[in-house]
Length: 449
Ligand code: FAD
Image (cartoon, rainbow, N blue to C red; front, side, top):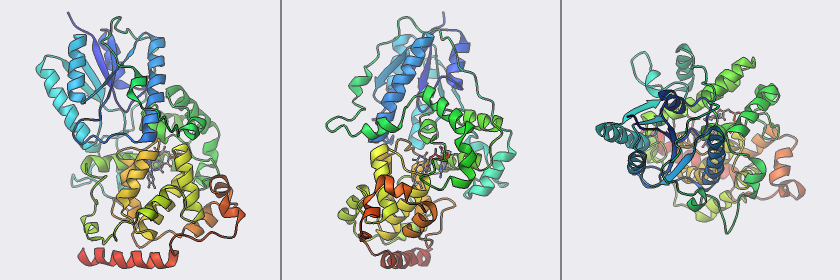
């Protein structure tokens, strides 16, 4: 007799367009959905604070969606390889399905688990669900991987188009006596003492139903302004889908096909292309968060860390209006507009002369959309050490950026109003002098190249 099927959910907290879930349902046996909080496997990066907050609520929403359809969500904590094997044993499961992950340590866990389960006679299958094109399918003419975005994206667009999304199951034959689950509350994912999440609660509603609503709303209206105003932080012209894609509440396939069905595309889909490029880069370069992609940047002479400057940046007290506004938006709401992320990151690296890894860590802890690919990829892009990166010598002037993209001062007025109501504040460093110092330091990189 065949046992139940386990769907091991990871960064795919959704019912619609979930190939692993669909395969389990189609197999015809009882279905058990499992989520493992893995903070122990070697190399798996523990989630940041804002990400933990999102995860708690997204799991709550997923559990309720499963319950309505007849299934339950089993929660367990520990090193995934052991925990999934134990759960399969406890449930007498005869199949385990999941959607693939592309980070190095995650792949190590998944491969080991696949081997161990198969050795025990358990059927295992994995599926493509979190990227539109899998990393090994996109190659240059010589079979290498791309290091420049435009040819990368053109090559993706020449491949067969992403598959159509799978429909959402309305009923799931859940296991009547699923293996024991831990209680979500016991995981301590939500902050308390202090509870700093008020701004996150105000801005976001995690979970698949809200993600689908946001996609529909964006395609029905805000996307009209996307091409013109996507760089203006006060315009509200971007999709705000990044945390939804990060947690897999929406699949990129759904976003892709619904955008095209709405008669849209172009610029917006090209941004999804940057997400693909970041994941492919991580796949080929698993140390993206710790090592310079371009090794000549290892010669960069970072001065000794000034914790006072780093703290001022964290807290949005740099005296530079757009940077302060962005850093406060981040702290308060777990998000920062893309243009402002670029300016705040450039200021840290090229005016405060602080190693990009310190900035990446702060974003990792505070962004609700922080992911293992996009965050380090974009930090390295800004720092000049990454794939297809902005040249190091191109240093953003944060005041000119504010004039150009926040001309009416609406964004600064919302997040750092003191910059508008007083005499101009004094930046914590002199912008022109630090820019020169950064360019001098950069000369070491070019000399050692
Ligand atoms: P839209 O403009 O509506 O774009 C649609 C989708 O395309 C986004 O939801 C996102 O999934 C993808 N996308 C857009 N731009 C990028 C990009 N440059 N790189 C990768 N994907 C992109 N994005 C993250 O999802 N997670 C991160 O951890 C992250 N860290 C960043 C760190 C820095 C220093 C910088 C400069 C950018 C970072 N980004 C990150 C990229 C970008 O800022 C966000 O994806 C974007 O602001 C999300 O807003 P949106 O959903 O409204 O974007």
